[in-house]
Amino acid sequence: LASTHTALGKGADDLERLWRSLGLDRAGTVVALGGGTTTDLAGFAAATYMRGVEWVAVPTTLVGQVDAAIGGKTAIDLPEAKNLVGAFHWPARTVIDPALLATLQASERANGMAEVVKTGLLAGEALWEFADEELVRRCAAYKAALCLRDPHDLGPRHALNLGHTFGHALEAASGYELPHGRAVALGLLAALRLSGRDTAPVVDVLSPEPVRVDRDRAWEALLRDKKGRLRIVLLGAGGAREEELPEAEVRAALDALISG
Amino acid sequence: LASTHTALGKGADDLERLWRSLGLDRAGTVVALGGGTTTDLAGFAAATYMRGVEWVAVPTTLVGQVDAAIGGKTAIDLPEAKNLVGAFHWPARTVIDPALLATLQASERANGMAEVVKTGLLAGEALWEFADEELVRRCAAYKAALCLRDPHDLGPRHALNLGHTFGHALEAASGYELPHGRAVALGLLAALRLSGRDTAPVVDVLSPEPVRVDRDRAWEALLRDKKGRLRIVLLGAGGAREEELPEAEVRAALDALISG
Image 1 (cartoon, each protein chain N blue to C red):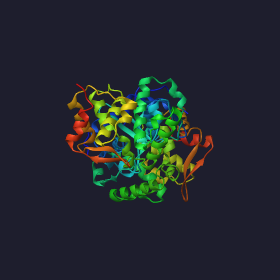
Image 2: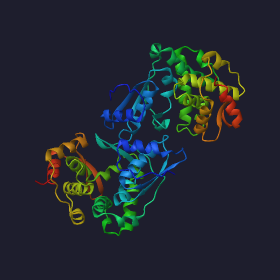
Image 3: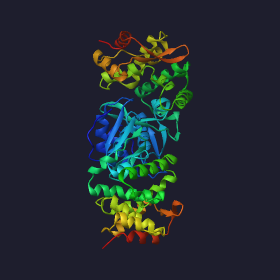
Image 4: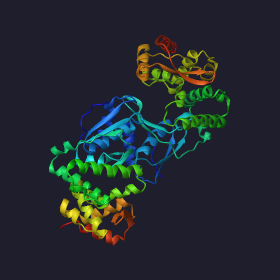
């Protein structure tokens, strides 16, 4: 068992500091207590320390409890891209205590609610209406089941990118000033519009406001992310599906999220 | 396909530089052309870049061709320990050209011959007597077969540590000034003596000379490596086996490798 400070970031420097401070043997376990940044970083350190030791995720934020700490993806950020380096390394155990959420700031809660709405849309159920304990349980269970079906993200798991293509582009265009939850909320709006679906859940629960970023910069970030093929996750009656869309349609959907 | 410079080391800084220079997508392949340092580093970068891309090992040294590039182990060094961080990530392909060995320095060849003798002892065959092409083919095949039986180093693969417990201790005590081949040659000598076996192959082929290092420092390094349990790989009639030996016996075997 290793006790370390909460890391401030998940860059290469943070990783090296964590590696050097672990002092475990092969039978050791890394316990990551914190938000998505902490579980991503500590999980990757565990995946690679002595070629892999066990780890336990204890997510303390709504994003962590419904999304980041579920599914075995670990990663760090490099200046070239977020999550550029990482590993698939499932935690030996994930310990979730929704009581921790009572202490969250409103802005942090909003980040998590965007993922809750995404999960509810994919699950076809208004998960956002449940109280925390049930909401977290259902979202975590939905994501865990999907990830277990596709642990290496080769197909079904792509559904989890619903809204994220647009969200990432807006985040990048803002120089990562835009909170992730607000970016995802806008991205979900675009995905529902392109899918011809009612946008009420996103509008009512997340109240997404258009963001003031450079339109060309957002578009270039989206193209870079997609590497030329505009395959977008849409929401059909039977669930999510990926579809290659015409450039003009995707660009118009992105532009509609941007003000000014 | 990524083209990069040969790395000078396999530290955390080298790794970060390599990660940042790769610029691959998920379908990319890292090709590592060089000695064990290069294949260890590049293989680990490939294991973690975008949570894993393919890599091809093209070992150019005798150590690389008979040992380091075979078996899927990749790693970097940290100040706390060599190979402290890494991954099991088999190359998609290993390309071995023994003709490259003609350009090796004698000291580099000696490093490789120590691993050749180790492999021959394990295989029960005088592999060191073959000409390069056949020698490399047989050593690489022997190690690959053993590693495929035990890809995550949980049992049978421990045989490959023959002589390495003592070798690592001597290297550490020398501040890593002692060449790996000389350390392994001495380690094999100790392992054969403890096994009650004829030491002629090691003496005749590798001519190991006792090394001048601090005896206590070497002993402490050995204990740290073994974490208190003195399980040593010995060579029996039926092949290698691990055996827990009395402290006095192990210490005497180590001391006999040290001069002055």
